Amino acid sequence: MRKRYNVLAAIIISCMSFITANAQTFTISGKVTNNTSKEIVPAVSVVVKGTTQGTYTNSNGMFSLKVDKLPVVLSFSSIGFESQDITVSDASKSIDVDFKVNNALGQEVVIAATRAPQKILESPVTVERMSQSLIKNVAAPSVYEAISNLKGVDVHTASLTFRSVTTRGFVSSGNTRLNQLVDGMDNQAPVLTFR
Image: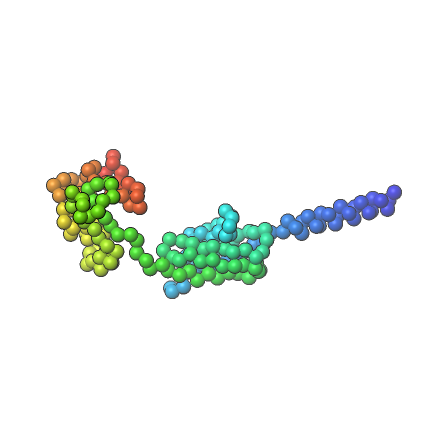
């Protein structure tokens, strides 16, 4: 009878060790730095490619992520930097990521008096455009200074740091006649009349 209990106990222990060996997790950690200035890069998204599992780098550029199996592909992304994928097959080594800066400018600024897209030559209103190269090369401290030089556009300076874009003839500190869209979303609070 005692031999049966010993055999049963040995089977249970071997099953438990098999289960714990298969349930092992690996901790991947590392640091993200700027490849040109070698400064740390905080708030970088680190995601296991093909899953929703991920994390962010802390204020020191460090990250730590637990995964169930190796190898995995980690995808690093952040605004202003090029996305980068790294394959990790050994969790014992710390990963150092040199993040490349993305030097591309945003889209051009378009000021128009209608929401519907129209061709410039067929439009009954004046449409002024600022291309990316013009924004890059303009001799002005901000985009608002450059916009004020466009035909039919007034930029009203209500205080030292508050500027309101208006059209010719409707100068006021809070213009509700003009929609300011940034990436397709309204950028102006209508009640408070600021951007």
